[in-house]
Each structure stands twice: as structure tokens, then as C-alpha cells.
Amino acid sequence: MAMKIKAKLKGDAVQVKIMAKHDMLTYDQAKKKGTEANFITHITAKVGDKVVFDASTSQFLSKDPLFQFKFKAINGIKAGDKLEVTWTDLKGNTETASKPIK
Amino acid sequence: MERRKFLGLSVAAVAALPAFLSATDFRATKPDAWTAKTVDDAIKALYGTTEMIEKDVKVKVPKVASNGGAVPVTVQSNIPAKTVSIFQDSNPEAAVMTIEANEYSIIDYSIKMKLKTKADNSNSVVTVVVEGTDGKLYVGKASLQVALGGCEG
Image (cartoon, chains in turn red, purple):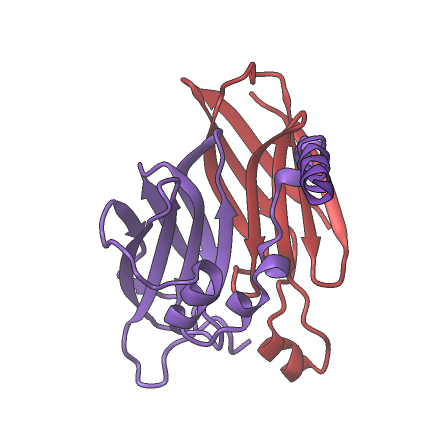
């Protein structure tokens, strides 16, 4: 498991790219393979205790899903701050990774 | 009087929760939205209505997706939003994701999703609902042809 994070301050917003490494196995795919479905069900990105991105997700995101978003650099958020990303999957696995904002 | 006191206490307790709990797990709070087969049923399960205003929600997709396993979708809107949800009408269930917006949010998201080729080979439709802070639902749609489905394997 691994996660790739890019976060860059541009003007008054932070541009983020996250690639989560996950099979995102749908119920149909799992049935064919004789295994159990498993996919990311929730992903949250924070700077300190500020939630800057939060999504509940389904089996239909692509394998190794990509999330690209922007958020406002307000309330003191600046370059050098750490962006921390956590995902949880259907089986309850969770992974957290972080990267400083460039 | 007792009830009033109790309510007051519970409000104080909610206010004291740490900030990270502000993230909502919509799979837990709205379970039916994730098993709904049609876009309308999913929207109804999530938002309680399908009454929507068709404006100011931009959805970008390729005209043809050569790989249904990873179809790029971009969503943009200037509407002050509470939530943003993405649905499609190709896969066995309609829901793809629900984003909870807050003061930090800029509605400009790009993701990649799986899209199955429809049985009749017609275009797939991606529907995006923005729940405004005004309580109204705004909707935008985009359609595309999926050349190779994303759910077959």
C-alpha cells in the first residue's frame, strides 16, 4: 500500500493531487474472482485539525483512485504546512500519509 | 424543564466535539443512497427529493472513454456548497461519491471512475448534484460513450 500526494500553494489556493494505491474491487469483480469486494469508502485530507477535503466513496472509483482538488489557503494555512490524508476501506483497513504543502 | 436542561446539555456536548469529527460518513448516515440502482433513487435517498435546478454545475467528461476502468470526470461550480455528489447510470448502483464541503472548499474536483458500457450501447450519463448552502439542489450532467467497460474485469 502506498499513497502519492502532491500539494502546491498557488495564489490563495492549494492544489492537491492524491493517488491512493487500492484495487477498488467491486462486488461484481470480486464475485468473478471468488473473493470479497473491497474498496475505499472514505477519504479525508487535513491541515492540522482543519478538514480541507472529505469524501464518502463507492466501489466505482477507478483502481488506484485519483483525487484532484483545490482548497482555500485561509485561517493561516501556508506553504510548509503538512497535508495529512487518511483513507478507510470496506474491510476497515486504513492508511495515512502526509506531505508538506509546496 | 428537565427536557430543556437535557437539550441544552446535548448541544454543549456536540459543540465540544473535536473538529475532525465534522467529517460525515455518508455511507453510514445515508446507507440507501449507496445501494440505489437508479440515479433518481440515489439522489432521493441522499437528499430526500429529486427537485433540482439545472444550472451552474459544470461536468466535464471525454466524449468517448476508451478505458471504462478509469474515466476522468471534472466537476466545477461556484455555488456555495454543503455537499457535492457524483452519480452515473451505467453501473449496477448509481452512487460514486459524496464530498462534504466547508469553508475551505473550492468546487473543482477531478476524479477517475469506472463506467460499464450500457447493454444497449447508448451513452452513459454522469450526474452531479451540488447541495447549496441555501438548501437547494443544483444539477449538472454530461454524457459519454464508453468503449470498454470498467466493471467487466
